[in-house]
Length: 168
Image 1 (cartoon, rainbow, N blue to C red):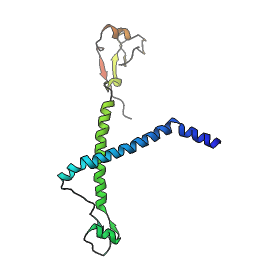
Image 2 (cartoon, one colour):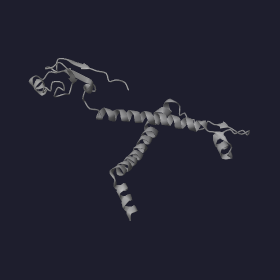
Image 3 (tube, rainbow, N blue to C red):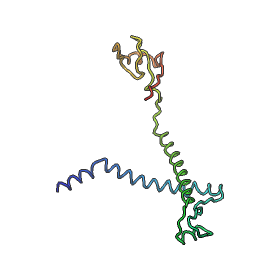
Image 4 (cartoon, rainbow, N blue to C red):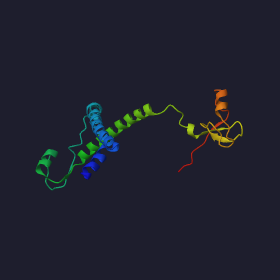
C-alpha cells in the first residue's frame, strides 16, 4: 500500500503533470509543423527545383547490376541509401528553419518593452556623487532617498552611463 501512495504522490506532483502536458502539446505541435513543411513549404520548393527526389540515389555494394532502386531493394542486396539520408537532411533543415521563424516570432511577442541595457545603466547620486544603479531608489553610500529627486522632475538624471558586464 505504501508503494501505491508513493507512486500517487509522484504521478500527481506538478512537475510530472506539466511534463506530460508538454510532451502531448509538443507531439501535436510537431504534427502541425510537419504538415506545414510537407503541405505548404515543400510544394513551392518542388516546383522551383523540378521536384527533386534523392530517395532513388544509392550505392550498390554487391557485384550485381540493377537499373532502379526498387529492383535493388527487392533483391535484398546490401546498399548505401545516401539519397534517403539527403532527403531527411533537407527535410530537417526546412523544419528547423520553420521552427526558428516560429520561435523568433514568439520571442518578439513575449519580449518586454523595457530597455535591455537598463540593468547595466548607472546614475550619479545628487547628494554624494557616487555611481549607483539606475533603478535604485536609495543611495547605498549616503542612504539618501532618491524618490524625492525623481518625483520633482520627470526627467532622467543628468548623468547616465552604460557599463559592460565582465565576460565570464
